[in-house]
Length: 326
Image (cartoon, rainbow, N blue to C red; front, side):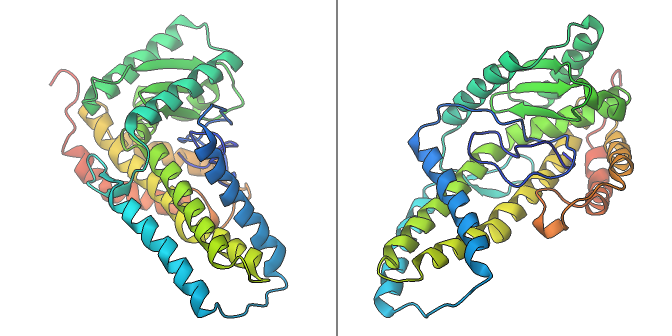
């Protein structure tokens, strides 16, 4: 959600730069056997970022020759044809998104990650707390309409971690360190609904697809510039440009989209969506004084931006709100 703990990604190797303290779709580095394709994509993205830092300080660039441009455009055209076959749309918002991974693959990877995380973390044995998270979670899950998901709700006993996540297929966990910030049931519903929205919107698959796209462009660049002494520079610049111009903006978009969708889901479940606004105001207070990157280099919207967007979407969410019993 706000800024979060180490790996901003559902899947291994697809990690963005760490941000501030978080309640977000990110989870601590979960390692699954996703196959060589995903490792390949992550390696190219990381390589690009490294090369950019290495050569930007001594930038000298010769123009690409006509033959190199022709080879590059051929590679790009092949990628565009692939993209046309890999588009989907997000529920609620209707946004068109890139999806080059099937939902079944995504769910399988999410389940593997979930099992590994639960095997390493200490689960809460508090029956009252577990009942509370399961009760709220089941109401949020019902509001999404995804009855095909095998929903699970777990509480991880870690008071130092302000975090929560929902993996593809409906695998939800809340860290105990988040509960003081959530405060009440409505605040906790805002957290869970936000995380659930990431899974429903398939943000993990979209992020993985974007990484695969960047990897493909990197390959096209390598092929087009294989005889150029500046080949590594071109690939490095592509990696840096992709991070700042594609991956980070979409990461912020995913957060905003999960905020909007989550407010609607919690409202449909009978929780007042105004609690989401109050939650983020508390999160902003908790984050005061902590260093964070400028918004354009961040995986998350700035607190001020986020709160303004939530205020703008609140009337839409309130139109779905029916308190339990009415």
